Image 1 (cartoon, rainbow, N blue to C red):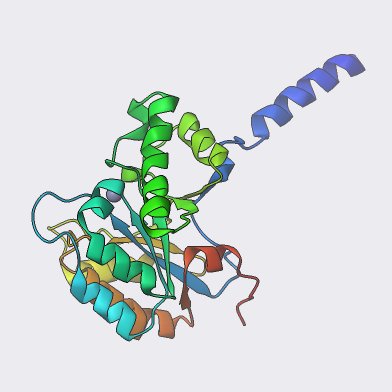
Image 2: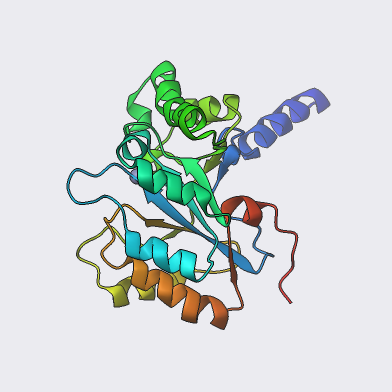
Amino acid sequence: MSFRRTLILLTGCLLLLAPDYALSQVITSGPTSCPAVALTFDLCPVRGGSGYDQALIDYLVEHKIPATFFMSGKWAAKHDDAVKSLLQIPFFEHGTHGDVHAHLPMHPPDEQKQEVLAPVRFLKAKYGHDATLFRPPYGEYNDDSVHVVKALGLRFILWNVVSGDPDPALTAQQINGRLTRLVKRGSIIVMHANGKGKHTREAVEYLSEQLLPQRRLTPMTVSELLACKQKAP
Ligand SMILES: [Zn+2]
């Protein structure tokens, strides 16, 4: 085989091995060397009920637990008081979660941009808040979504631990069992603060009072976790 041909073959193999540039922009966890985790709470729109888990928020505030919230535009527009009080808590971080909680891959790039950008603009215009983190509704995205979010200067945040808290079939024990199996250094845990999780507060109590101290893990906001240089002892 000629040198030239070998080179072409090699280049082809390397291209196949190279990680997808777009997908590498999607963040699912923090550094696994960091003895911390991020508790994250989506605020997806809800039809009935208050749409706000006050007991959960009270617990987080009372115990000074850093947390990251992802607000959908539709939810924020209906919960002015809740938005104001959440934004006041210094150890809470706030990102966005789409405008109407659309399935991004079903839309062309211009509509995806609108869905991503609307709540960012809303939080800035109404509350003077700069939201730099974005979480796609349903965790659904395609390459266009990744490019749109990057072009807007936002960070694309998913998770690597699904608590399962909105599933009405799961008991608190089952949710805690999942957390026990899955939570480790650098984990980003997805939960809900819109009242959809019947046992979310219990899960957070379990994390904060038992699982995290047992594993010597500290809760941090997503941005803190991503910047974490600490190493586990
Ligand atoms: Zn959602």
